[in-house]
Length: 268
Image (cartoon, rainbow, N blue to C red; front, side, top):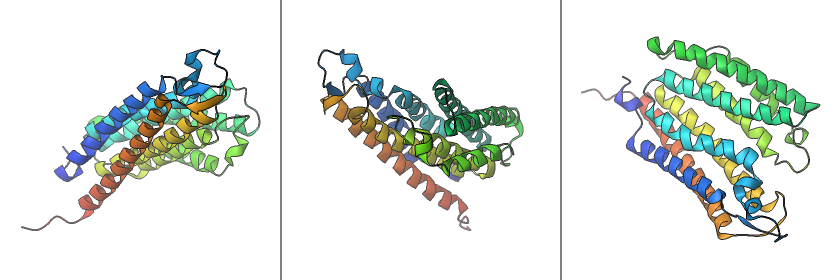
């Protein structure tokens, strides 16, 4: 077992479970009519926040519900590396599928290929980490994480406008690369349980920022055209802000815990 100072504190645990609970509430509120449609003859389902932004809200909420609790339940560094690797598989695979489905060309085609490569590399890393779980001793992650890190950093140098088309929300195409870069760097270079847990919180913070932007986009910009927000739409946005605040708190607490674990133990 890791030292007690590496284990999540009660505050970290409460924040993780609270984030998962709030994310579940966001999901519930998002399936209700979030806007008043300009065309009142349309079905109410078209007015739900989830329907108006499903392509980016569904995967974001899936990770925000499941990943915080998994991170605080992990008791070995290899478990958190595996969590980061498998979550990278999901993020890269989902985004690549969305790009391939849009018949990409030019930079979008390059991004789809890059994300596919990142997803395959993440699967390989996750399998390697799973096989090494029994004899993990705090070693660094597989070297193929460098591939994901390099691909993500290269993509982040590409203007979002080159990936966006039509009314696409541009941050949709940047967030996956930020997530992949943080996860790959942590998996490759993180050694302590606390540092890896902090990296997972930072990954989730990027998703929470995306959630807030995505909810606002779904309510204000997505089609069909809307006139005003409903109470459910306002509730969805407020709850997404609460998720963001919770994860910001998790990052701060994780950083303080890492600093504590690196401090020398008091001599008796």
